Amino acid sequence: GGIITQTPKFLIGQEGQKLTLKCQQNFNHDTMYWYRQDSGKGLRLIYYSITENDLQKGDLSEGYDASREKKSSFSLTVTSAQKNEMAVFLCASSITGANTGQLYFGEGSKLTVL
Amino acid sequence: SQWGEENLQALSIQEGEDVTMNCSYKTYTTVVQWYRQKSGKGPAQLILIRSNEREKRSGRLRATLDTSSQSSSLSITGTLATDTAVYFCAKNNRIFFGDGTQLVVKP
Image (cartoon, each protein chain N blue to C red):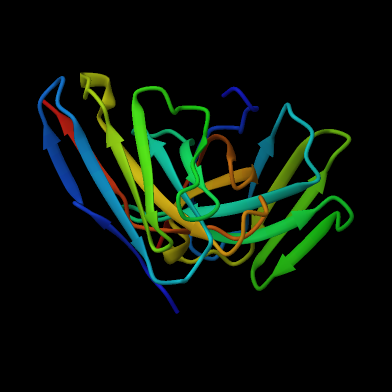
């Protein structure tokens, strides 16, 4: 089996600050994803990547940057944190870019903006 | 949500009871995935059903998909306290429908 590791688990930042979340997977999966989940709400896709150095925008990409440095890692940057950014960010991977492939999720990174 | 609505519900039942959760959506799909998210964890896929299957079973789970009414359901028989979670349906890996159903199973 494999695992998705997200760091940090909790991130506290100031409004206007640039903040970066990291995700590592050891499944050797091709595709990785970043989702945002607001409290009591569903998941919204921010970015995904089907291979190293590839980036595809999701519905919520404005205000975020992403980087797929290597196959096993995918980073997400909040370019300028806003108070309404308080949310949990979930990283996931799937074996291929086929859009019905099973997703494997990390436990999330909780962002709080002061 | 942009892609459809899931019947946002908070269900509270006793262990051993059966439960059915529904998902309705606006955009056409031939596949629905159901995920479960326990508190403080990421979602985990439970079952994937395709339109040519109509119904799919996995252990205590049963999923249905009706493309004509654009709805899907997930049933759990003989619930356990460990089934307490939020349940989501998704069109594919990029589109999750709605805000989920919060299920609480009391021991």
